[in-house]
Length: 295
Image 1 (cartoon, helix red, strand yellow):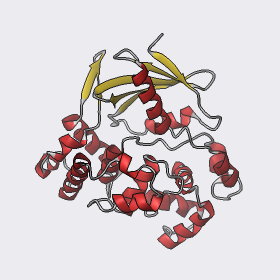
Image 2 (cartoon, one colour):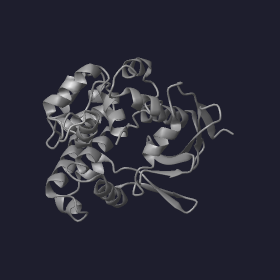
Image 3 (cartoon, helix red, strand yellow):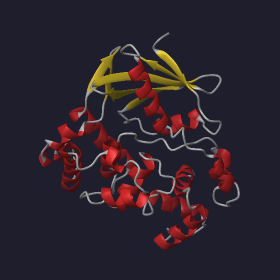
Image 4 (cartoon, rainbow, N blue to C red):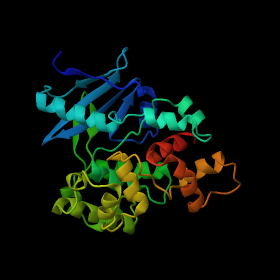
């Protein structure tokens, strides 16, 4: 069938583990997981394209376009998106070689081998999601995202099920703070979200402008935008650009994982976290991922 195509995957990839991450919240609105597959809506130029992704018996990924003919342009865009989404182009062998010799990671990489960073190929979505999640629990963060997407995002209904697109920067840049306060955003998060959207809408910030920069250069550019601090910038660079050496040093979840790994009766200090991560130089993002998974 012309609406089906296959994406080969590396040996060090476990779709089931990545799918379990996608299932972590019942309030997730940007994709729907049904059993062994995930359905997602994405933009291809000005078109909303709905696709289903599942694993085949030979472990490759099958992509089925559900609401429109799969043109070569759509196929190219979907494959690029999915490869970014699941970080399929990163060679994990050097990380596993290092991690199997590390006392904190060796059992984790054995148990969760093939787990990869499930990213945000859309930089605007990545930054806004990070801002939404600042200083609140994950459950409420998903609630805020659901309200935000339902109110301002695009949508397509297929077979009586509505699928959503993340709001675009131009739309969000035209909002007022009160528009987000009504959704229970704090005033600070409202201002940050609109400010980030304005930076994208004006062209001051884009994924293309950061592409090819070093981690330090990209982080400096992001942190010029109000509301984007070190944690938010590091998170976005880890999840959107897959910088292997990006990691959110201040992350509470990472601190909880290390508290357990280091057998501490308190959370580790930032200096202690940095000291542990010296061993993971060049692979900080994946060390973070597997330590998060330990929770």
